[in-house]
Image 1 (spheres, one colour):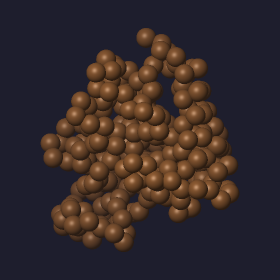
Image 2 (cartoon, helix red, strand yellow):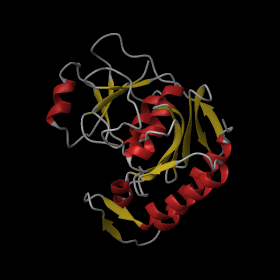
Image 3 (cartoon, rainbow, N blue to C red):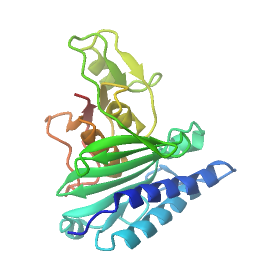
Image 4 (cartoon, rainbow, N blue to C red):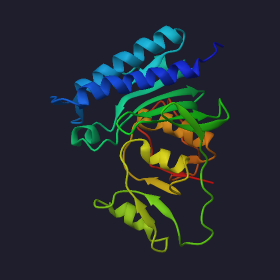
Length: 256
């Protein structure tokens, strides 16, 4: 089994972030993909940077990226170990220019995210870690600081829950009914899960659609920080490279 050059993968994510910022700082066109989600030249530039780096650094590992043609199940079912990539997570946030977008690269092994890097180029920070490296870190200006999840409140009061401040779905409102005046924290992209990982929030109920590449990297960081991300209906850990679809079921990310 080839050794993973984690520091080089982090640098690749940051290089993709630099490519994104080059586009971010100028006028750019926004296109619509077949599923009506937005696409920009920044998505494609970051995709090329990451794929080139991964193919050079780990040539034996397959890559599943949002911006590449999806591999059919007959091919994916043979993948015990592969890279799961979202070159630009939060394209809507990118278009709005609110800085809350990320580069996501996750190592998936036997359906589990064992390591990931989440680079937030406009915010100047990078999250990385997982069970493969036995911890999680937040890097600012090249300085790594260990991060861990917070201990959950012991009563229904005092919870910090990640969600939308202004566009709460009926399912999210029903979820909040179990809590006593929780603080609602709003954030874009996979940074929602990173808030849990660094102890800035306690719960993130995702009661809407996401794809595997949206969550894999931050999920790995969360596990490294001592948290968990489970399917909302069953309570089982969220798994990857599923036969039916690359869409995730609804899930809940939580701290300790």
